[in-house]
Length: 427
Image (cartoon, rainbow, N blue to C red; front, top):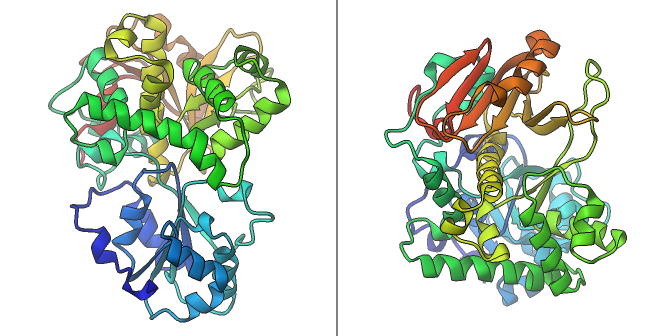
């Protein structure tokens, strides 16, 4: 039964290359087991299935029961080649069987697993530590949608100080265009859909299933209405550094419930807390995390808004564009530079930088995100402040804006249209 679940039935649709493709293939060449994690419907199964010889689909009740009854026997009975275990968390004992197979000498690339929850929060002790390598796959970025996933990323160009290679796409959007991109979402299932009604219904259903069915499938018992209300508050404050008390008071829940809900929402890859950056050369830095809705388009069903509503409210416009840019940069974690994402704010609020990308060697690219099309000198003063304090560690500061042209307002400070994130020069 399981041997019949071949990859061919899952790969009939043309594959859209992903940024992580090369990193995934490199890991599979050496690691016996690799786990793709990310939001539900982000394309994990499609990406994994094209690399698999046998597919075990645990959302199929018959296959799930066979694996649950005797996972070791099922895995041992499969042919040579790569095995994809899709949605492994629906039969979590299979993870122990994978661990034992790896310990028993499984060859490189034997197992490829996918899951829509953060496994370390749902499995006691995470038995696959040291045996299964994890790689995140987020929703589609605009670079992937435009077909440039295989070229050098803007992030790599910035860390490499190859600024002369930065280019623009042929069509540079304005603020309304970026808002439309953000609300169209990065879900592969919505790519190319013309019906706004279909998109609205799909996104609304995604929220409904996340707060009701997905939490139950993960073995979590939460009040779905309260969880939805807390998620709505986070959506209204996406991209902001807001005190935890402000959030849970607005949702009319207590602190312990909010902490529990934070764990659930992050486990399901609905929200993310970007940590505050720390540095020995900068004193009195605030420690609060910056919260984001991982998929900006989910603000539409959660807040009952559309493009016209967003454009009528400057705060909503700024938050959605901020979240859209961060979603593009989040997808670059598999780039050659392998940056970690942080934000920076000093304790008295005098200086704040929207996002810091820190490379493995400690070099920093600082990012400010503005919805203005013609930013003035006030827009990059925090970048200049950080440059002067970090010295050579500061590769450059980038001011992303909604205008049509790039310019360099100061030393190692670049003002770039947001669309340079998927520009074509150097590719």
